[in-house]
Image (cartoon, rainbow, N blue to C red; front, side, top):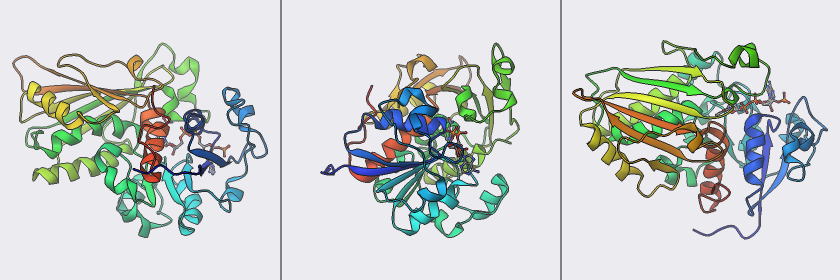
Length: 351
Ligand SMILES: NC(=O)c1ccc[n+]([C@@H]2O[C@H](COP(=O)([O-])OP(=O)(O)OC[C@H]3O[C@@H](n4cnc5c(N)ncnc54)[C@H](OP(=O)(O)O)[C@@H]3O)[C@@H](O)[C@H]2O)c1
């Protein structure tokens, strides 16, 4: 791998977001990049360090409007905009041959009809959907390196797919004996910085609630696509799965408990995951029976995975822990950028 000699320039659309702030926190450790622009509608003209005082001395650059940003130059652009908006703002960059990493869901599905069904509007560039590469680096590294558009994975799918893809691709999930159940709990930053009643301190603190149960969460479409492809690799059917997200009154982190109807016993499952990720720096598979906690991964790009059994039953329990803003969003986006731009993959992401 040859590292670029001159710093590359990056732009951030929607820099006034939680994921934008996290990108800048991490990029401040990256010697190989310079920030070319940061955008925000509501804070245009305001230094980013006024919005996020933690960035004082790190990024004091003033925000420009997203409209002005689309004419700006950069080698790589990150979008921290909401789905349904992001692809339209990225199009002018893509048309100019600038490589983009979309943290929203706009390029995660490959079927325009599926996108319209889950996101409630037509995609502005359906012809580009099949060209976007899903940015789960440990699984699609080679394609990401040459990609023009990288669809950064969703936070819940990251926590679910990292443990499940190796098992699905090796026929380890018993697709006839469902369902596969994922019960995921997310910190409140997962809901973004905009004001919402459910994220108010009094609503969320000392409580916990399920939402979008019954396969209603949009990330189901993304998980189904990736899990289906992995099962097809093994020549098996897509398992029937159920996904229920929960709001947890912490700032960051996603803990996913996954109940797998497996074709193999829990120790073999564990061994499969150990083997699959032995050479992957950001995936840590715990010794059998040890389960991860959020405190082990917050502010890091790690996904920690634990596997245990249910005595006298053939269900395997897998627990994964990630930081939604780092491994589930901005850390993963930088891992993708490093891969696309020829930097060592862990640059700016070490502990
Ligand atoms: N939060 C997470 O843990 C997480 C994890 C994975 C992926 N994501 C995805 O990453 C993206 C950013 O998430 P976030 O939670 O960081 O968002 P956020 O804190 O809610 O910020 C959203 C950003 O988009 C801008 N924006 C909102 N509506 C807009 C519009 N109609 N036109 C132009 N700009 C608009 C906002 O700023 P202005 O109003 O100032 O322009 C802000 O900069 C989303 O697509 C989200 O789904 C988030």
